[in-house]
Image 1 (cartoon, one colour):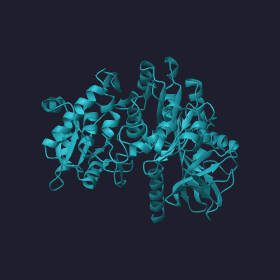
Image 2 (cartoon, rainbow, N blue to C red; image 1 turned 90 degrees about the vertical axis):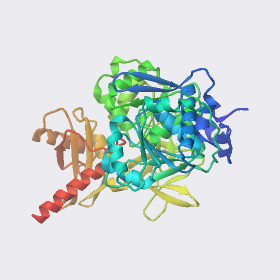
Image 3 (cartoon, helix red, strand yellow; image 1 turned 180 degrees about the vertical axis):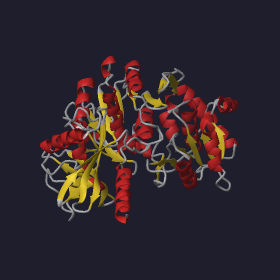
Image 4 (tube, rainbow, N blue to C red; image 1 turned 60 degrees about the vertical axis):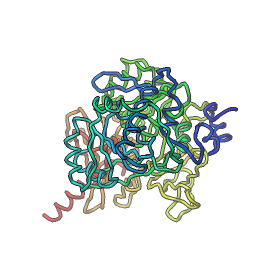
Length: 527
């Protein structure tokens, strides 16, 4: 009998995709399910087939098999039992992709404990907030971060035990069996996932049950287009939703070998990995594509890419053009959040779904979205409004602005707080950024509304460039923008910066820029 993985066309997705059809892809059922079993154990057949390829920043390639991860995860699960860890206890780990990372991730979930992946670049404030929130029984990290972890653990009475995941830990657990029988229910909690945010504000942990893996497959099948036989890669950190769910769990659940990046990101190292691993399907953040383009080194490599997807934020037209020229396949946007999941996709690999550049695509099967005006009525094609999602018998806001076209495709128009109203004119920060990024000397750009005593707000652009700053360059950028948009849509203020503030997940953090400008305005007013 055919399964959803046997179909690739958009029409088939609309006809056959359903919740029941998703369950047919798994061994578990609606009562009993375990992510570790579905992603690792059932694919460990003694053949040594690769599960994860890790491209290390220093140039090393590391290949981990389903067999090795399965054996290590089982041993780690037995070790957790011996240490008195109970179902529902949190096991936090701050590790780069490595054998210890996957052993801890899947081993904890086998026991019924809850895995809490943490970003390796967290400083003390960010780590302290998350440890205080999830209250882990054990905090696992590497030797480099051990002192930081211990100092944070001391701040909490009965704080987590800090364990260093090195060869010593792997040697220690070799005394335990290489198989483990999980007894989790589908609705038991499996993962606490923190979204990216500032170190001073704790983003709420999104709590995922084991059955989340099933609903995830809509995004895997139609957002990233994963199918058995793909050679997959996702350079996003598995500490974040994209890297963990779409880059790790989704492909492994289908028995597809995935790839990831460890260490400080380098776009040239990524392109070498794509070439050497003969990657056919990649899902990455918009920033990854932009950095590859800006490296100027893509022509040194040969690629086998057949499907591409991206998430996190829109890709500017100049980068989309580079993707077409470099990989010869369209980049397919995948829209969603850690909280709501993926809801708009471009069906990579579907030959009957035209991909429109810059579009968010159309809804995942079973989802309903609408662009609405302020009064709750549906906005006509071409009109910007708030993107709403139908959930629990009502409309819920995504806090994003969007518009549709006459064919029903959705387009992202920025966060609700990225709208700039200046002297009565309403402008989109994203639209102005995309236009400025078409200028050959603009490498990166962020646009915000800066406080102004006359106009309320004025458009201010922060520009990263290799060209020497000058008043003439500012005028050139202003003219370049207003000639392509409208006479009022241009940055009245341009500031050249060495880099833009970004969230830990790599997105441009406009909030930091807005806060800085607000503080400057308050200081000036006070003076």
